[in-house]
Amino acid sequence: MKCVKRTIVLFAAVFAAASVAQAQSASPSLGPNYNGARYATDAYPGFDSEDEIVKPERREPKWFSFITGPKKDSAAEQMAYCQELVADGSFSKAAKELDNLVRNWPTAPEAAKAQEQLADIQSRELKDYEDAFKSYRYLLDFYSLQCDYQAIADKMYQLAGVLRIEGKEVMFVRFENLVDVRRAYETCVLRAPGAKWVPAAMLTIADLRVKDGQKGEAIKVYENLRNIHPDSDEAKVALAREAAVRMELLNEHAYNRFRCQDTIGFMKMALRTCRPEDAEAIQGYLTSAQELIAEEAWRATKFYDSTTRTKRSAVSAYERFLADYPLSAHADEARARLGELKGESE
Image (tube, rainbow, N blue to C red):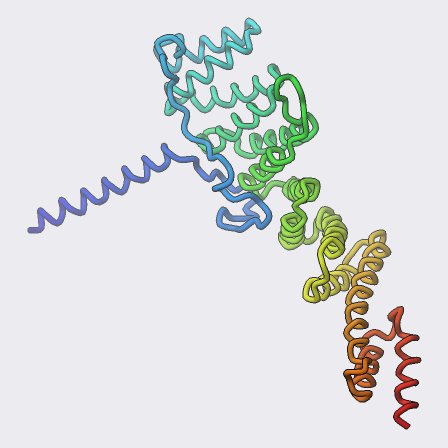
């Protein structure tokens, strides 16, 4: 009986170890969270979910590999061959053979080095920035412990900036590609949440959301940036930009009392913490929001001053309006009408 139990325990341990090993080889690793500022489980509101982004999968040997596959019989020989191609300046061919090495010998010691060199060639020599970004991402996802994680994450962030400037090329025509560029920045933040450039990346992500007409999502990113990095210069910029976007949303939609009150509350908070150079604009937003809610209150007040209502209810409505909105553009009119009603009562 003891022998059977020992066998079961041993089998369970072996099965668990095999499962872990299989999971590590079959799926991307999370990678080191250098600087230790954030965790993989932390939420990033305003970012696209993993379900909306195509996840990288382990590359496999190509079809008809006897024709398109590697030229050598081992990873070491293939790597040496790739270096000969690089030395000769045959960068396109070298990139193809480095890719073949990673596909056919993914667990070989040369695989991580080949993947990094492939990304470097795509970026520096071939100027194929989109593929270079994907190659660096693949390196972090599958070989995070076999590369300089921070250096690669930094390269990805730099490439995201290049992609933002260069745009996307289709049939030799370049055009602005807001979604892919934004997702590139999001990828950088999610893979290196402790990097020094994260606040700037998040500010860019929010700005790209605004540019793409997704103002509600932009507000989530601005707010998250302010919460995660409250002392950063980017957080101060985000506060002013969020104020502007909130005011745009308020003006674009039909009157909503809750939204108006929420905007007023935000503007009051922003005035207490904003940069001096942003105070005038934010005060203007606050005044405009207060005028919107006062205008709605005025219409409600006028409703009580009609032939179907009593003078007492009208007097009460005007008094309440003046108490709540003494500086409203309708304040003088309210005082005058209140005087008339009270005079009639006497």
